[in-house]
Image 1 (cartoon, helix red, strand yellow):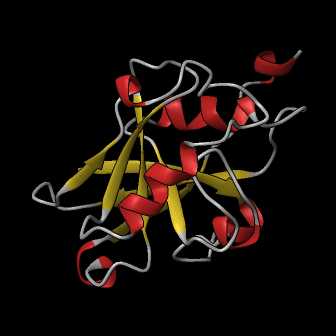
Image 2: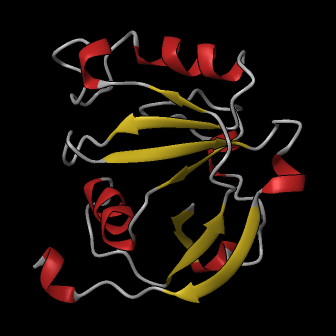
Length: 150
């Protein structure tokens, strides 16, 4: 499986990415080492745009390969409260992440708040198989079209 992670240019040499160690998100508490990924570059970019007030500048796209045979912890929309897409993030979402981190799964599949019919993936960096199975394929510049934030 190929996944994509968008990050700031200044972090282009940081592998694995450390963003969740320093901040909380919809699916993580600060200190939980996860990599937020999308199955397409366009969804990864949309997720970044949703969290920025201005056009993101100097970004990179990390292409990540994870074996297809990895078990996936799946969080379906039907397992979530109706307000799960709200911001600030509603209570109850982190329960799923804690269950995921306590499981044997390397990946967690979650619905995207940008389109609940699409999914993002979180990779558990502290999983015992992470360094053996997760591969950074490439890191490339990923500009954003200025028309996206005019």
